[in-house]
Image (cartoon, rainbow, N blue to C red; front, side, top):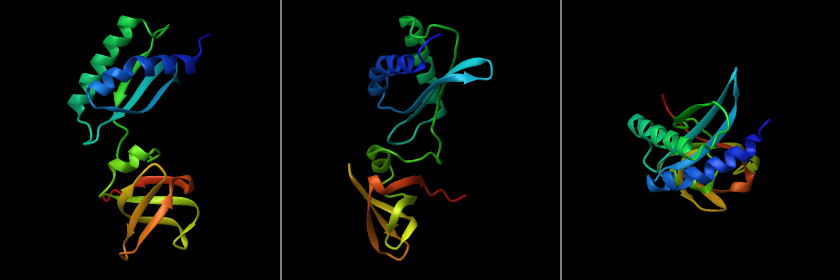
Length: 155
């Protein structure tokens, strides 16, 4: 048997320079059985979003690099995709990218009297975000208090 976590860490280290060179960020990397096959799935994004063409080019470049370095000990399927509009915002960078956009936030403790807030993200840093609520009020939320946050996408 092989150590999936060790493979994930090795792959991250190999691919990090390639992604940095293309100004793409690794949002999530998984390596697991899906049905009868192993799937190595990269979720990547850029500050301006990512196109299908960019995802295709990244898929080819990552695949070539992993094959060249023989990084995966068995057969696998490589998928490189966007995290999607409804992905959870977790890191300070995730929040910084959403500045100026509307987000929904659930908190562990009440903030401004509520645990569910929505509004325009006006500021984000390593420790907190600031939302402009629909009533115009601005409120600060510590990242340690955020249970879940997503972009508020209107369809």
